[in-house]
Image 1 (cartoon, rainbow, N blue to C red):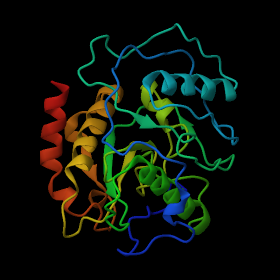
Image 2 (cartoon, rainbow, N blue to C red; image 1 turned 135 degrees about the vertical axis):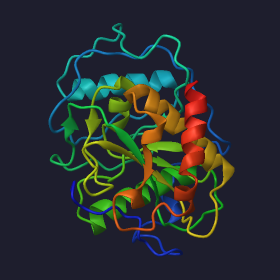
Image 3 (cartoon, helix red, strand yellow; image 1 turned 90 degrees about the vertical axis):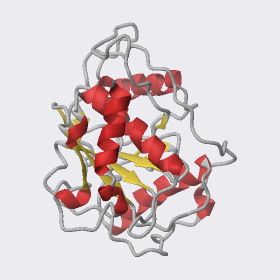
Image 4 (cartoon, rainbow, N blue to C red; image 1 turned 45 degrees about the vertical axis):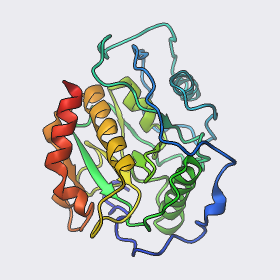
Length: 277
């Protein structure tokens, strides 16, 4: 898994088998996501080793729901969670936590039991990808959720992986979703990471963010760009990653990914540094 290539080579205009838009999960708001406030985050023991393969609870996308999901996730892994214990994130964080839908919220399939490995180290970089999927003009959250299911189906059914390869996904409408199970828990706590399958040689040390679409000849929508800046700033803050350590997939592997987003990495690093203050 960790040595496998990512999925950034799909031809434009094609979707993986079984990936029609009908996979959405009911009517959902279609505007750009709003950032939740960032208060102190819970600490306490973190899960280690393989994580449970059963479905995770779903719920609203508020900060409270995300933290409640983290508690349930921790309990399912047979690790105590102390709800009133808080930790390491500064009380006056420079970057508010963005709304990130967990795997249960977008209807993820359970991962295979051996797919999820929690590493007891913090990532040292962020790697930006594009999915090489068609550039959809559906900017709704329902489409973002369907896109996340398409990616997971592709990875599990076509690639034979145990779960989505990337840690997080950013839609063309700017909706953020958790990719590989357990990634959001690690991000909120800022001390561990889940091993990914998005970039050969970097899966045990880099957070992978997939951006929906193909950007070899066109730029991404502004909503996607704004969401990418916020996500990278928050991730840098949580894990202590310098903004200079934001890279593109092609910096490490022989690929065109992430297309024109790679040309904008200096701009992205500067924007993230400005958000961090």
